[in-house]
Image 1 (tube, one colour):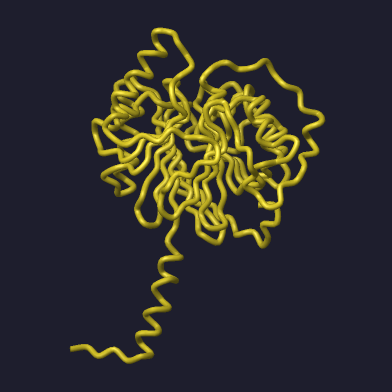
Image 2 (cartoon, one colour):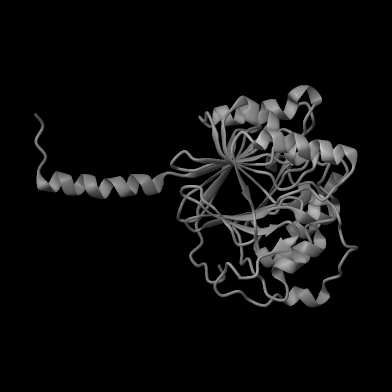
Length: 342
């Protein structure tokens, strides 16, 4: 029998927390041709999928999502968060629930759109949702996923009432903000979430539109700053108002656009002019943006013939890396020394 000395016990006890702390958060940005499907896998193996891509197209997006879930070593989803009820976001939720177990579905409640197609889409989702538990998200709620601090910052057209940063500064850009026409669609009711892993912070606002974005950061920025900004609404100009993008001060932005959807020149310029931005990644070359696209090494798909993904790996100290599966190259970002406005 092997004998353990007191010193060896001490060494083992100290080693265990260090090994646990070294485990990373993995985030997969799946190519669903201008929809959204973002998979989070925590160090303890729990998972959250935000949105599910388009239905149809011979199950193109469904198969890509399921393949990524398998690649991540998962046999179930602990949480499936639906930002809103448009086909490019909720389209495969019920189909995924037919293929693998889903623990909890998260959404903002009933759809506000009433066309026949919108009602049919929502009804299909609700039937699939019945296979798991249901959480109706409200601003300020927490998603109880292990290892992460996930705060709902917007849902159902409402926003946070209490800040999630300390301290939260006044936003000097608010005075020059110009509102757009009110958006009565599901986009404005998107579930937005702040995902925090140790000192790493990432925000996903679904398709939240211009005026609702402004409410989150004016007159004071209720959100603080982030390491990673998933461009809202696939990089369309109805969203990504400079008043919020520049207040968030992302170090890295990732745009889940398609070749012919999202990726507007206006949004690309807004993001690239954000204070402190180090890099901007795209899931696709944006055909309409031409010279505004980022350099090719920062793009996962140069045309629609491929379905490459972007993978982010974050550490608790706030450092992270981004992997482009097309080029098989990884870029690393060091942890910041301070987090005074977070």
